[in-house]
Length: 188
Image (cartoon, rainbow, N blue to C red; front, side, top):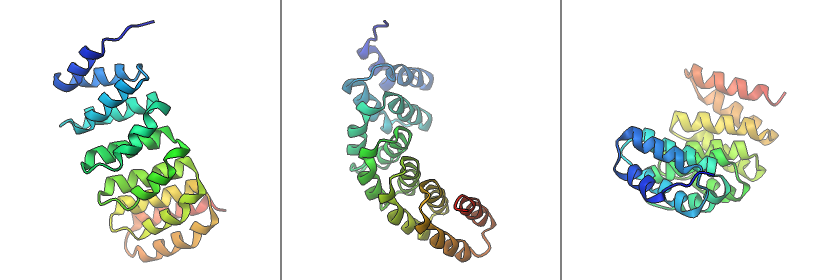
């Protein structure tokens, strides 16, 4: 069994160069306790998006011990924290996050809305169907695509007509229409 020095890992994660930070975040995934979860969540504020992404991936590996702290991050003001928390919750796929992820569908940050929709699709809880259908009207193209894909993953017939309507309304948007057509084939 490997013994990890939390102090050294925390120091590298906060003050190391990019490669040291990424390596420290990967190592922290092996320490499945509250202290490693908290240190990784604090990394959501790092300047480097690759470091933030690795922190989120490490939290996915930690899995269940990270769920509650990640749900709490959905309520903070800082956008990166909410976005990466949603990304990590998507990877974990825990049912206990469904209510908070549904609330995150109304976030001001398009990235949070996008990952929340995808997470809800992967979790597969039917409570999410109606709220995700509402995202088909979102102004952000990526959010609309994520919502469409999530509805396909949810596989609930209530989504068919709203997806068709969104496809009709996507005048001139061939890319969205392709996504909608692929998703609609899942319902046949």
